[in-house]
Structures are given as C-alpha cells and as structure tokens.
Length: 117
Image (cartoon, rainbow, N blue to C red; front, side, top):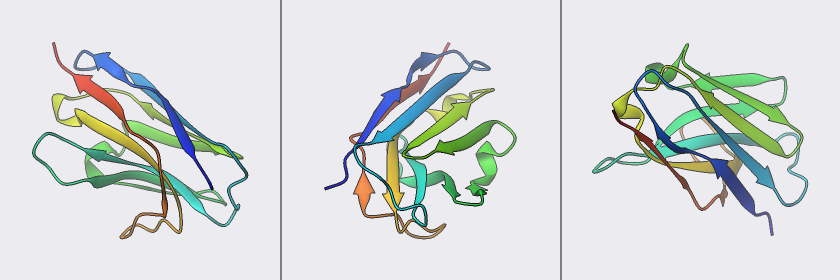
C-alpha cells in the first residue's frame, strides 16, 4: 500500500516562502502523477499543482508564477513564494491517477500552512 508522508508547512508572513515535501514509501509508477491539494477554512478541497513525467505541470491560476512543483522519483516538492493569506489551509499530497479534474487514489495526512502577519 502506497503511503505518502508530508513535511514542511507552518507559519509564514505575507510575502514569505515555505517549502512542502512529500515522500512515497514505495515506488510510484512513473506514469502516475503527483501533486498537491489544499483546503482552506470553510472551502472545498482544490488542486494546487500537479506534475507528471515529462515533466508536465499544471497550476491553479491563483498560484501561477508563485508556486513551483518538482518531482524526483518518489518525492514531490512544492516551493511556495510570495505567500498570501488566502494560501492558508491544509495541504495534502496526492498521487496516482491524478488528473486536472480528479484526484489520485493516494493521499497524505495533510500539513497546515498558515499565512498571517
């Protein structure tokens, strides 16, 4: 069973940076995508960024030019710069048959990101 373990997150000031990492406990098929979802207070879970072999990346519009997703074998990283209060939420690593419109079958436990002055 694939398990995803996230690290990083925490508190940042507006304009600051944070880095999230997610490591799978076993080999993720290279055709599978890896990515990050987030759920803000009172909001639905939404796709933040996705990466597949190629690499091909997808970002939601609100994070383009601020966030960068990268992948190295079974680890996916999300570098978040120029953070805004609206980036606050629980960030979940996701992997598997992840598409821009549907999550993959594997989830991490989530890590809190809070952007506040």
